[in-house]
Image (cartoon, rainbow, N blue to C red; front, side, top):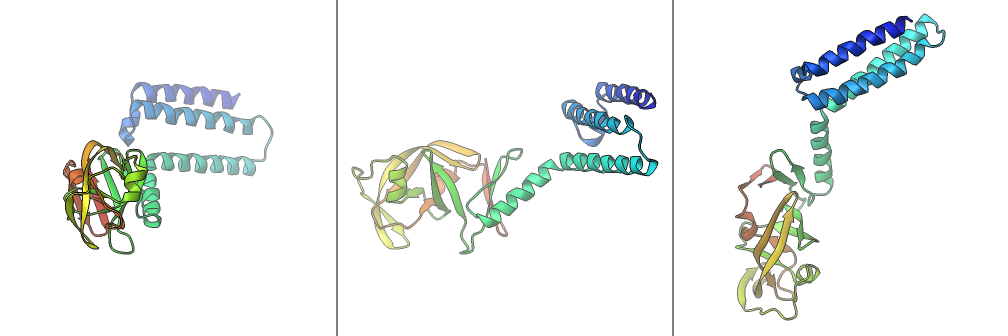
Length: 228
């Protein structure tokens, strides 16, 4: 009976918390507060099971401390969920440098410098995942024959008449238009690009025809930050 009375008091208190939007005091909106309160209510119901049978005082207190610790841990995880997500993304980026750390709130995609010193980027070209290198020295996006073919471009019938300077020397490339270029959560349509002739390029380049569509990009120590 005592527990039922306490539960009723707590239920009334929870209703007041939601109605007054008290969650804003700790940075939660009303929807988040309602979700958190719902979880608390479940914990109260579960904890109530401890009172349905006779227990020693020490055992009951131990159970109360355990449930309090579980609840505190759940609140902590919920409160710092964005920080935990960013921490996990940074670990993934260290292990796989081409994978973007995406921040939807700020509209940025961040890449870690690879062991070779360059910034490798896993982009999507016409829906095909393409490994590229960030290169502000390239006036346009440049694709290798293999990546262009995988992206659905007719590499055999293109006109390779545009002279280009590559790491292997002077070569030729064909002018094309890419339907979609996506990096992280940043997506652009109808991007002007070049397809290098066979053997002229080892890795596709993310050049200025894509980079100039961004609101900005910066290299901060070992991080490359692209802003949508």
